[in-house]
Image (tube, rainbow, N blue to C red; front, side, top):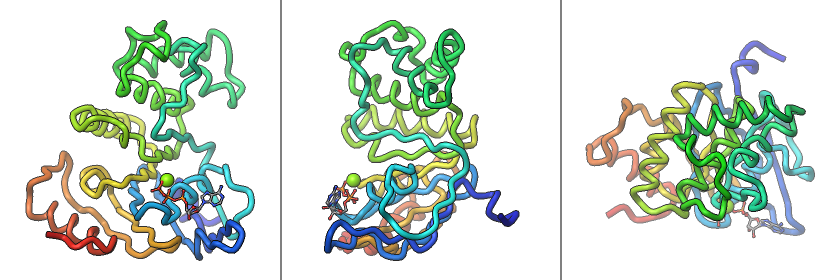
Length: 242
Ligand SMILES: Nc1ncnc2c1ncn2[C@@H]1O[C@H](COP(=O)(O)OP(=O)(O)OP(=O)(O)O)[C@@H](O)[C@H]1O
Ligand SMILES: [Mg+2]
């Protein structure tokens, strides 16, 4: 393994994946540096979730090379909490695969809930939470194991616009503190430009564009530079930018 590779949170080379006669990933190369936020955009059915599942280690029948630092954590559009477990036990569950259980896992869960601003909800039941609160619990469950790579599949897609902006700020605050790499799948080009260091465009299973977003944070959405990035991405997505 080369020194350069050790600096990567994830590296894919020549990934192909087929469902029957349907090729859904075509020769995909993708690097995510440690501490880098990469957004993945593309039309519905372009293969974004499939690519995320390859990175997550949830796909077995692809070909090509996959290297990922540590055990990546995943969060989806639906929080997928276990309704019969309290909030803190849902978060602690994120440590079970690492073999951490009992009081140690609960203490880590409480610390992480504090970080996502939900310390007061630790004994609540998932069904009593708002959508935004449930998504913060899902984020805590993903982060409790201190992953080097966080994989997010449209995690904010079901939230209202204001809650989504709160979640963006929370994600950036956690990212600054912990420095994990992120792959963020999103339909929302503005969300991609607001959050990511790089935006990768997937078109019919192949990488069609890879755009560096060299704007200082926090990012103003109304600026000309923001608009230029948005236009380029909309063009790459085949949307006529008005
Ligand atoms: N389990 C499966 N069996 C067969 N085909 C599948 C399966 N999962 C996905 N596909 C196909 O693979 C392609 C890519 O799907 P994928 O879910 O990765 O797209 P996506 O970019 O995440 O779309 P969306 O934006 O709608 O979430 C689609 O053509 C889809 O129909
Ligand atoms: Mg998807």
